[in-house]
Length: 203
Image (cartoon, rainbow, N blue to C red):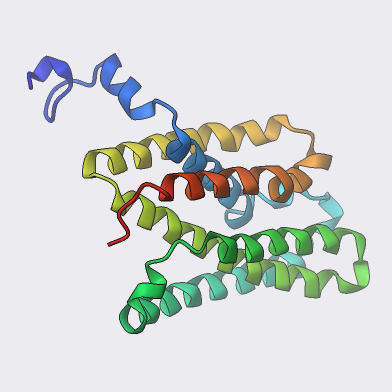
């Protein structure tokens, strides 16, 4: 390839950018997941919830439970990939959706049940930590199973689209954003994984 065509070491052209950012189910699904996960991991979830709900105790227990379970999930995956390689190679999307969905339900429920708020937030953090780790591993398996160029292109494109989606969340009324995430956005990026994983070679 010639340098003018945007090959390695050449200038970045419009056609190269278009190929990198051209939307497809994998890149858009991954981008949407990154945006939603950023909303729950980087503290962005709390601007979507009432201000009076954001006490020090709520935030502390949420992030403590989330980070601990997130880390333990990767440790469990490490052990599982060694002792149960066939099981950990599977795309068990439904088992990843469940804790992620329930985690958001716990956060929403904590807004309305003051007496249970701290327990629901802790449970929500743990479930979101488990679900987000599971989705990260699913996306990693999906991209790793693709041809190198295709996987890299979807990874880069999805990362860029994730930035766009994250800031687009702020265009949605705050009152409905927390409900849209588990009811609309979660099914969309889970569906993207299911559709894209149909065509891969699992071996």
